[in-house]
Structures are given as C-alpha cells and as structure tokens.
Image 1 (cartoon, rainbow, N blue to C red):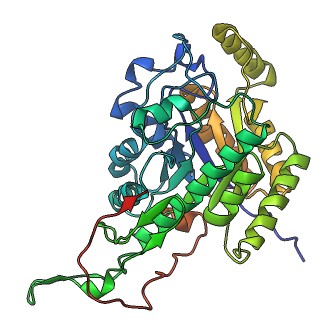
Image 2: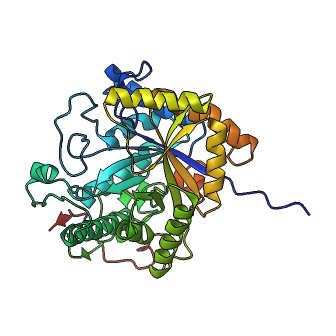
Length: 413
C-alpha cells in the first residue's frame, strides 16, 4: 500500500512597495517611478497569478512608512507614501481571473461599516476573490490624523502599560471583525428579487438589523451592500504573540505567524490551536501561514551577496520580524516542507525586491514545489474560499426573519 502523499501547500505573497528590503527601490528592476501607477500593481499581481498563488496581500497604513515601530522617522532614503490598498485591489481585480486579493485595513481608526461594504464591493468586483487583512495601529501620529483618541507612545512593548494598550487594541479589532462579519450577513443571499413584472427589487423581510452593542462599537445595520459572493470573504491577521494569536483564533480564517525555526513554529501552532478550541471553533478550518522574507538566486552565495549589497545601500543590516531566507528555490522548498511538518498549512512570502524575488517565486519555487507534488498545477476553484478549502458559510440571520425594515446607517462609539 503506497503512503499517503503529503498535503499540498498554500502559497501567498505579501506586496509592499518595491519590496520588503528598505533599499529595494534602488535596484535596477525596482521601477520606483511606476510605484504609484495602476500598471505597476497590476504587473505584480499578474505575475503572482502566473505562479498559481492562492492570494496576494497588499500592505497599507495610516501614516508614512517608518524604520521605527511606534513613530515616524526623518529618513529620505527609503520609500515613503502608499496608494490605498482596497482601491488598488479593486483596480487590479477585473484584470485578473483567479488569484485572491487581500488588502490591509487598520481597524483602530476605520469604521467597520465602511470596511464591510468596501470588502463586499471588492468581492463583487473580483467575482468572489476578496479577503481582508486586519491590523491595529499603535502610533500616536496616526491617532492625531483622526483626533478621536490619544495613544501614548510605547517605549518598550514588555511594560504593563504597553501590554494593556495592546490588549485593548486587539480586543477592539476582534469586535471590528465581528461587526464586519455580521454586516456581511445582514442581507440574506436571496434578498434581491429583481422581479420587473411585480416591481419588487428586494425582499425586505430578508434584510436584518445586526444590533451589535459592545465596548467599542454600537452598530444597528443592515449593510447597504448585498451579501458578498463568498458570503464571508476570508479574514486574515498577522500575529506575533499570545494576544494577537487569540484574535486569530477567535475571528480569522488565516493567521500569519513569524517562526524562525521548526521548534518555534510547532509551539506557535499549538498555542493557536488551543486558543481556537477555547473559542469554540475547533471544527472550523483555520489556516496558519508562516511568513518569510525571501531573497532567491541561482546560488546561496549570490543571494547572500545581494542582501549584503542592499544592506550597504541602506546603511545598516536588514532586520525583520520574520525569518530572512537567502538561497535557491530548491533550498526554500526544502525549508517550506520542513516547516509544514510543524502544522503550518501554508506560507506568505515577502519578496525582498519585488521585481526580482517575485518572479523567482513564481518561476523557480513554484515549479520546484510542483515537481514535489506539493503545489497545484492549475487553479481548482473560482473563489478565494474555494482555493483555501473554506466552505461558504451559512447566513446567521437566514433562519430567523425579522419584521420588514428600511436599510439604516451604522454608528460607532
């Protein structure tokens, strides 16, 4: 009897500017003059789709990029400024056919009502390929853009005050996602009748108040956008410690984690699975993806030399929350297979230089994984949930019709 073949891996890329290394914009392939054009992002996502990747994530923020975690900097030798991730995804969506599109949204200052309809719209524009990456903000300068709250500057993340602030922000993010999910369900799938003969466009019995009241939000609903094609576009989050692991376990479909070796990966997966069970979601599919920054070349020496050259341009060694891999596609495939044995179900790769390392992922790594029968040979589903093996969820309100209502607005407190 032949042994059971290993499960195929899920593979995604995280797109940020010209790449994740701060000196990436100075490489000949970087195209910094095109960075704020639709064509630049379309080319990157099209290349990712060429490699049959599950999805791309698009970074975003509410303040200029910074070498500091909690404050802006004064550097002028690195990329600063972004396009809006949701709008970029909406522009690219009609020009692609299969790949998932997951923009980043900062839950700390962005109303869940707005995000629910933005991602629902993206799901319609992409015909079922939208997702959401939720993150928090700890920067006082970003708080000042909105004036709704003040955030103390964190000098050290290990202090009790910092831990209390982070716990509050992640609890708010969990509520934010809950409101978004409820709003996606506030229209039943067949609420739109569109019957010209009778003059009925919607069945008002199939629109529902969400009536969310929590510590951070009070939202009446329903949404103004019908339920997305996927029902619930996948929700994702990056997590580095127990508090964000809990957010992933409670509210996400995919968590991105940053282990630096197999032992750490195994411990992280175990902690998230325990939190998932405690949240009552043990029977639901929750993917845990490992994040890696990658520099891929024909030899390890070439990859290392390229990193050294980039570090020299940046004026300092590159440091990342994620493991920085330098080597060949075959060596990276070996590492991914090793890490997959720890319980990780996929990987989100961060190209150090988008113009160089993304094609290396799609044209070198993907064929290597295909040879090992660890990656698809063709797209096998028409939606992002389908690619990820996530069933389309039932509408939580469908079984209990409420009285007819007129769509209203949502407010936050």
